[in-house]
Length: 530
Image 1 (spheres, one colour):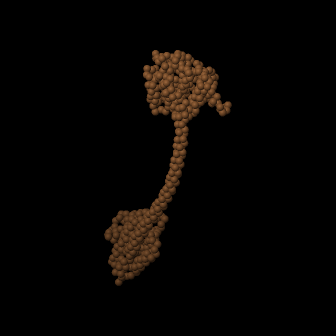
Image 2 (cartoon, rainbow, N blue to C red):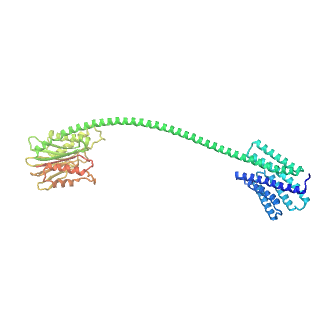
Image 3 (cartoon, rainbow, N blue to C red):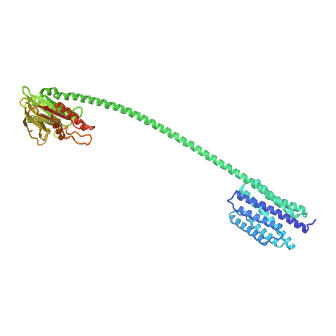
C-alpha cells in the first residue's frame, strides 16, 4: 500500500520524536563527558547544541504554530554553542564535521517550519532534511570513534562502534526505502536510538575502566613512594648505625688515650711527689743544719734576765738569722739581727756564709768594735761570694744587719748597722732611734767604713734589733704594709709588759695583720732588757 499524505504526516511525527530522542541521547553523552573531564568545555557547549536541536524538533511537533521569536532564540543558542565549540576545538577538529552539518540542519529545519503550508516544497525539504540527517549521523559516528580512540586504544570497542553505526545507517536507509508505513516507522524508531545507546554504554564502560586504571596507577605511585621512603629510611638507619659505630670506635680510642694519659700523669705525679718528698726532706735537713748556727734561747736567758726572739721564716729555711757571741773572761756580749739577700734555700746558703764570717771575725781576728767587725765581715763575705766567679758574673748578694756589743757590768753599749736601725726604749718611755749606714754587708758601690755608735744604758732600758721583714708584711684587706710607725707604736704602748709577753704580742699582731695573705719575707726581731 502506497503512503498517503496522512501516513507521511504520522511518519514525520514518529521521526521527529525519534530524532529528539537521538539528540537528547547525544546531548547527555557530551554532558557526561564534560562532568567527567571538566577541562574539556567544548563538550558542554556541544551538548547545548544537541539539546537545542531536540527542542526545535519538539517545537515543530507539539506546537501548532511555533512563535518566530522562539525559533530565533533556539537558533541563537545553537549558533553560540557551535561557535564556542569551534573556538575551543581550534586544535582538535574532530567535531568540525558535526558542526557544519548541524548548521545545515538548523537552516533547513527553520525553512521547513516556516513553509509547512506548501506541499511540494515540504516534500522537497523533507528529502533534503533527511539527507542532512544521514550526513549528520555519519559525522556523529566518525566523531564518536575519534573521541573514543582518544580515551582508549582498544580496537574491539571501536569496531563495535563502527558496526553499531553501520547497522544504524542500514536501518535508517531501509526506513526510507520501504513503502510499508508500519515497517518504515519501526525501522526508523529502532535505528534512531540504537547508536547513541551503544555508544553511551561503551563510553561509560571506558570511563569506568579509565578511572580504575588511574586509581591503580595512583596506588602504584603511592606504593612506589612508600617503597622509596622505606628504602630511604633503611639507608638512613644504616648510615646512622655506621656513624654510631664510628663514634663508638672514636670514643673507645679516646677512652684508651685518656686511660693511657691518666696512667702517665699518675706516674708523673708519683715521680713529682717523690722528688718533692726528697727535696722537702733535704730542706728539712737543711733547717736542722741552719738551726745549729742559731744561738740557743737558753744561752740568751743566762745572759739577760728578760729577752725574746720572734723568728718566723717565710719558708722552711730562712735568709734571716740572729747571732750571739760572748767573749771569754769578759762581760761583753755581741748580739745581732741579720737579714741576708733572699729567703728560702738561697737565703739560707747566704746566711751560712755570713754567719761564718761573723764567727771568724770575732773568734779568729779578735775584733771587738762593732763598726770594725762589720767592715771585716763585709770583706770576708765579698771574698767568699766572688770565689770561682768570672769578672762579668759579679755577685752582689750580702746582708743587712743590726749589730751591738754590750758590757753587762758597766752598761756600755756600742752599735753599728747596715741598712737596719737600732731602737732603744728608755725606762722613762722615750724611744731612741739610731739610723744605719745605707750600705749592705758584701759588695756595693762607693763603699765606706761603717759608723760606730756608743752610749750608756741603764737598768730597765730595752734594746730592739730587727730585720725589715716585720714592717714589710702586707695586710689581708687593704694590701698595705705594716710599716715601722705601727711597729714603734706597739713597742712603746706595751713597754710595761714583760719581754716574753711582748714577743707573744708581736707574733699575734703580725699574723692577724696578714690574715689570709701569704708571708712576704722572713721575720726576725730581738728584744733584751737591761
